[in-house]
Length: 325
Ligand code: NVA
Image (cartoon, rainbow, N blue to C red; front, side, top):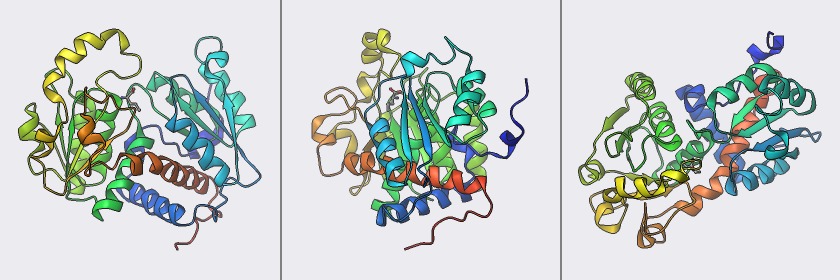
């Protein structure tokens, strides 16, 4: 079966490097505009329906997409993931063709990146990755937006991700950070680095943007002079059976005040949440003055509104992006 003919012309956000450096900057500029004037842009007027499907737990993603879609004049349709059984009860390709006839855009949080890619191939409408086992590009756009707000720039800044570099956030950080021209250091225990293919892709992107990708297993060395320190849970959704082993493997990678003191004095601390105080991060740091996690959580809405608006604008050459403030 071949995908619908429009499929090749439709843009998606399936992984961080789906956006070129120029496009990433364009989306972030748009996010700042939308944040400044949240109700002025109606890129989903109609209201057009956005199908949102969550096969893994969610709070921030579900509410920020629902609120953002409504603000854009659209209708957020929640497709109950466990009832739909996409890829299990009915094939991904069939579901894609069905949803593509009902919705203008599809947002999916699921396990396999390959499923998301299959959905995009057959849907005929833009598809947004709301987290897979491999990537979390919406979170990265919110993170980059937060850094731009607090630091005024992205290119040339040093960011250190401490913890499970092999999870979706580690993979996304190397790709999105390289795209933004940042110096990304991953500090993870051996065996928990981002996938080799993503490291290679990120390094080749960084070669064009002036950024860099470094692996440094010693967190104290890795954090030295960082502008931004980032962490994430040691036990990603789906890895709960490995909790005990992971707590042991990551014990030396807790982001506490002593570790953060090696970063620049004005460094900021990010965490995509949910956070487990006393595990990957101490309460003192998460709730402390260098933490920007609540801005980061709010920015999910603004970044995702920008992605949806940008993707819809790519469908129709006559439909231009909103003018700046
Ligand atoms: N790495 C985490 C991110 C949560 C937003 C997970 O996949 O559970």
